[in-house]
Image (cartoon, rainbow, N blue to C red; front, top):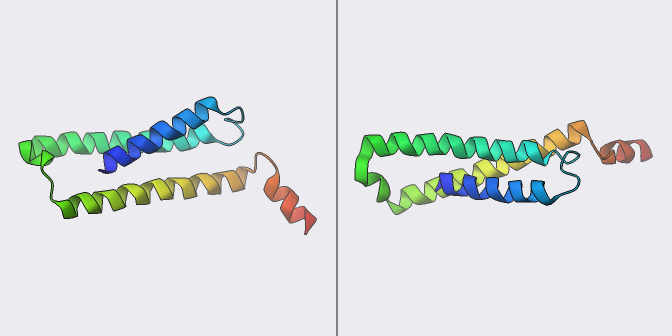
Length: 103
């Protein structure tokens, strides 16, 4: 489940990055790379777990699927938080600078 959530987040972010004119300003490539990295990590984890468990890998318990879904959503949210912090520190559009200087 974590693999699917990470792949969906990576694909959606990549599509938004590819179709957005401000892709370099908004650092969408960084967000896409974080999600693709998480997808690769969970793909390796799935392969190793399949090697260890065999066919049992495809019949997880519902509680395991729920835990994996929460983990996947948590990682997607954490990736968004990291991306927002990067945007606020780099401030490519000058929004934070304008807000601080106007007060």
